[in-house]
Length: 211
Image (tube, rainbow, N blue to C red; front, side, top):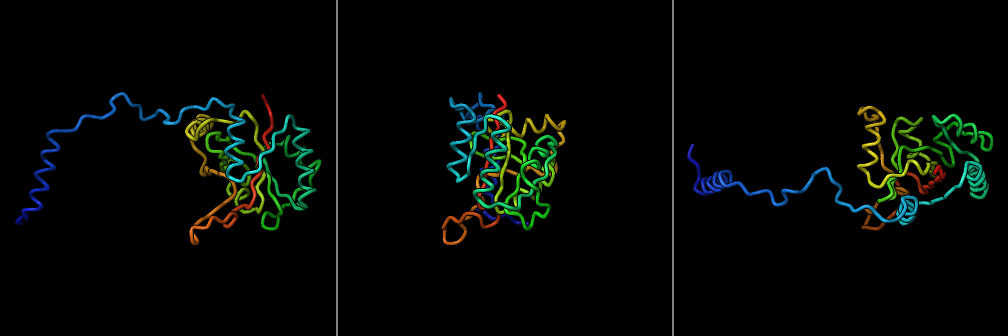
């Protein structure tokens, strides 16, 4: 088959490039190193700032009693009579049941409560997985998502959280890992930002101090 002059010219340039390879521009670079410089702020403060910038509602709790009391007060103020929660944390589940009657039907609840795997301080992101009871649905289908986390779950960057998940589960990642960065949002319609279209309209993070 006859090769056109233009195609032959392109192939010639490719051959020349392969025989005279370009040196690596940054030979000292490490592909595994983070491109982000760690913040001088405490992780709690950085997470709270980033999370609230994205319209998340952040609540810091010094102990479990404050957490449960604040959550109950918030539910009363907002009129959340139907709160759905299922958690693998038996102690927390019992504390919640002592104050709040769980609503079993996720489809008709006013709000849902979940735990999480980690909190990403740099981006204000909640990392959830299918390991948690109803981990695939609870944080997505309810109109209000309430996440209860501890200061020990704070990490700086996403790669730190994923590495800890790998270590925790012996390199066997959960079947689903999701990242919630504030309420759901879209700007697909005329470039106008709309919140709560395909997920929770409000996201709360209750951070329990375990320092």
